[in-house]
Structure formats: C-alpha cells, structure tokens
Image 1 (cartoon, rainbow, N blue to C red):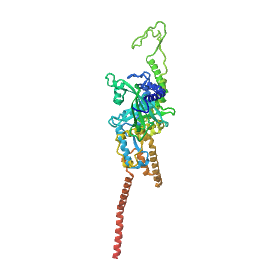
Image 2: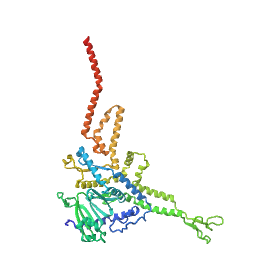
Image 3: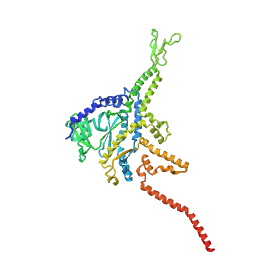
Image 4: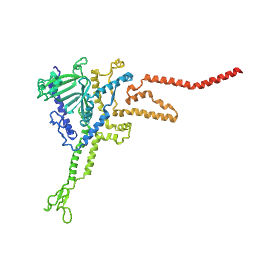
Amino acid sequence: MESSLTATDILHEQEKQENDRLPWIRLWNEVAWLLDPKYVNTFSSYSIKTEGRENSERQFDATASLSRDRGAAAIHNLLTPDLQKWHRYRALDLQQNKQAANLRYFDDVRDTVFRYRYAPTANFIAQIAEHWSMLLTYGNSVMFCDRLDGGGLRYKLIHIGEVTFAENHQGIVDTVHRRFKMSARQALQKFRDDCPDKVKEYAIDSKRMYEKFTFVHCVKPRPDYDPTRGDYKGMKFASYYVCVEEQKIVSEGGYRTMPYIVSRYSVSPSSSYSRSPVISVLPSIRVLNEQKKTVLKAGQRSVDPVLLAHDDGVIGTISLRPGYTNYGAVDNQGRKLVHTLDMGNLPIGKELMDDERLVIKDALFVTLFQILTENPQMTATEVLERIREKGILLSPLGRQNEALSLLNMRELDLLQSQGLLPQMPMTLAKDGGWDAHVVYDSPLSRAMQAEEASGFMRTLETAVNLSQATQDPSALDWLDIDTAMPEIADIQAVPARWIRTADQVQELRQGRQQQQAMQQMADAAPAISSIFKTTGTAATARAGA
C-alpha cells in the first residue's frame, strides 16, 4: 500500500507526542487515585493494569468523587439534556436566514440530526454523560464520531490515556494519535486482507484469536490535499492505521472532517492539554484526604480509647467486655487507677474538613446548582436568572460550544455523505448551498441569550407606563415591534414553522384593516340612516308647504 508516510514515521511521531504528555500522565494518575479509581494506571500503554481491581485504598473521603458526579450530571442537563433539541441551525449568511423556506429547512435538518443522534444504536446519550465526567476530572475528553455500519451515526468516548494530540498555528487541534489494542479476530474483521500475516494467522487459530495486538491510528491534515479528487486524497484529513508489532501500515484513508472531537476545559497558552476543576482544587482534595485519615484515627481512639494505668503490680489485665468487673481499677477510696488517653478536638477536625469540602463543591458547581433545590417554588425563569447572575462561574462551560460545534459539523458531513439530510429548497440551492452556523438552545445558552429579550420587555413595559401616565403614546415610537418579535422568537427557540412569514403578517393586517373598516361602516349605519331619514322628512315637509 503506497503512502507518503511510513509506519516508522508515524510511530516516531507517536513516541514524541507520548513523551511530551508524560507530566500530564503523572498528574492524571494522582487524580485517579484520589477520586476516580477505575482509571488508576490506565493513562499509559506501559502502565501496569489490573482488570477488576478496586484501587480505592488511597481514597479516604468521597466528597470530591460525589461532587464530580453531581456536577457532571448538572452540566449534562444544562448543555446537552437527554432527548431534548438543545441546538438549531442557521446560515452564516444572514440574508439566507430571512427566507421562511430556508428556516423550515434548517429546522428539518436539526430534527434529522437529533433523530440519528438519539437512535439507540448511536450510543450518544451514554457517551456524552461520561464525556462531561471525564472533562471535569481530567480537563480533556475525546469523542470519536463516525458512520454507523448500515447507515447513521455512531459515537464512542475515547479514553484520554489512549490519545495524544497537537495543535496547529491557530491553537486548533488538528492532529490526533490514538494507541489502542485489538484482538487478532477484531483486527481481521476491521482490516481484512491488509492485516499482517501474523495477525491473520492468530485470527484463524481458535486458541490465539483473542490475543491482542497494538495499533496506532493517526489522523492529521493531508499535505497533498486535492479537493478535485474523488478518492481519499481529496479529503482534508489523512488517516493511517499502523500495527505496532509488525511496523506496518494496515490501512490508509481519509476524512472530510476531523472524526476525533477534542474537548478541553481550561487551556494555558503554553500547553495543548487542559486543566480541570478537579486539578484546580487538587490541594484541597489532598488535604481533605489526610484530614479524613486523622479524624478517623481520632474517632476510633474515642470509641475504643487507649487506657492509662499505673504499673504497681496490682492491676491485672483490663477487660473491656460489657458487664465485666475489673478488680483493682480503683483504690479503696474509689479513685480511678485507670484513665483514658485524652484525644484531639474532633469538632475542630470536622470544621476543617467542612472548609475543604466547600472549596471542592464550589469548584465542581455543586453549591451553584443547589439553588435548584433550595427553593423549589422558583419558576424556571427565576432559576435561569439566578444562574445567569453567577454566569462568571460557568464561563468555562460556554467554551464547550467550540467542541460541540465541531461535532455538529462532523455529523452534518456524515449524514450528507449518506444522503440522509432533507432536500435543500431552491432558495438555498440557487445560492450554492449554505454554511451552517450552530445556535445553542440548551438551558445554559438560553440563560445567556435571554438578556436581550428581557431588556426589550423591560423597556416596553417602561414605555407603556410612560404612555399611560402622560397620555402621550410617543414613547412607544422608539420601539420597532416588527423587527423585535421575530428575533425574540428566535432567542426563545420558537420553531420556524410556528412563525408567520412577513407576507402572511401583512395579509393578516390588511384583512384586519378591512374588517375594522367594515365594522366602522356597520357601526355608523344607524346614524347615517337617521340622518337620511331626518333629511327626507324635512324635505317632504317643505314640499307640502
């Protein structure tokens, strides 16, 4: 198989990226020991891994682990709530968004994407929930999105220990390497005749078919990209699969869009990898863990105290059994000869632990989202207003829209290539298509966008009050209701098919004006009739005279 890159080139690049990632592996592994035992020693291909081991012997307090789970669940429901349509599409060209047919098409595309995304075979719901957990814990999370065999979409969260990545000159991740293992049987199913001979030999041997081989998947920009070609050389991203043991490229292809969606929480200018809220409060997690050990020891000594006795050869073995009589434990005047060792101050220890727990819960948004339970009588608008007030704490979550937008572009590309998107209206086809822009309708996004609509409504209320107070309607002249209403509906995520077009509104108004004119004529008819009647009577009288 011809390739501009050799297996040696790809593996050399893989080794360089893994060496650059080593400091992060040490940090991630410490985080795993303290609050995520299932990932202990899984961040490097060279680590010792024991399947099914509990790995919780270093974890004494579960506050950080539980707070992470609750924070991840809250973020999941704020950004990507299950079975809800938390985004829609618009065109980058604003003129295209003014056509009713275009808006209905964008909504149809949105409905199609969500239908395939939420299909049981897509596995999106399970994967996105774990994605938020990994992002909060390690600061980096990688989702692989590809075509489902048989048609549709398929999602798989990739363990961060398998992935290394690099940025381009603009700070965008455009190169991803993934080192993973597959059994010989799986490799033959995926790569078929391109498998190395040794892998084929193992795959057809019933005793060795489940032995695993290591592979590297490299996805990077294609240097010789030619958009006029119809094969993989006409795709922006090159794809190489390498069998590490055999030092052989077993598959070369390409992608039009990056299949690995890399999410990062808080990236420093000097690093491609990101820090997480858990890493930010790692000192507090360490301290809380040590405090818990100390308090546990003190508590055990308080419940099962250390006894102090004078060694005078009189007192024998002290028994702590209930109902047992220890002779010689007091003198003949009743004074104790056996005392307990004074312990530390347990209440102060608990206060110190509570201080660290509050820091951890704040960092993982638990205290922020407690507003949902502190006052259950609040309306949804009041809840979102409270969250908006604390929006500065949620600003890193807003950055996740970057990764979600890349995921959307990948999904649209896959569905388009399979012919699964709705037919484009002529208004768009004449323009040569459209450049999709993702507009987010998640609870968090709506809270951030609600300020404009709320400001307009407050201004309208003020103008109405002024008009009523002064009996002068000119205050309302400053507000363009016709311009504001469609945009407010857009902010409130009202489907385009529920909104009348400008022509329909104009027709409705003309009909209303005609109806009002007819009603005015009907109301005026008795008066006119009376005038005619009076005039006629007067004329008759004059004629008689």
